[in-house]
Length: 90
Image (tube, rainbow, N blue to C red; front, side, top):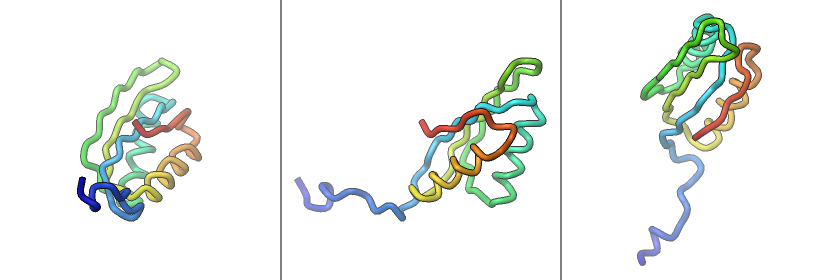
């Protein structure tokens, strides 16, 4: 096996990370999250929203080009938002 294949990827290398957030407040909560993504200029590759008005939570799933540190920061930012019940990478 090649020596280059045995080495781990550097943390500063941007990769596509899929992030899932459980959001309250229906479409309004989802719009708060998308506004934060846009305002912070995250490089969103795709975005899927499953809104359940009147339900406890809706789901927002997005794939974003990030380094490992940036992915951790995005999760931290999402978890601080009042409309976000939970956030994780998948």
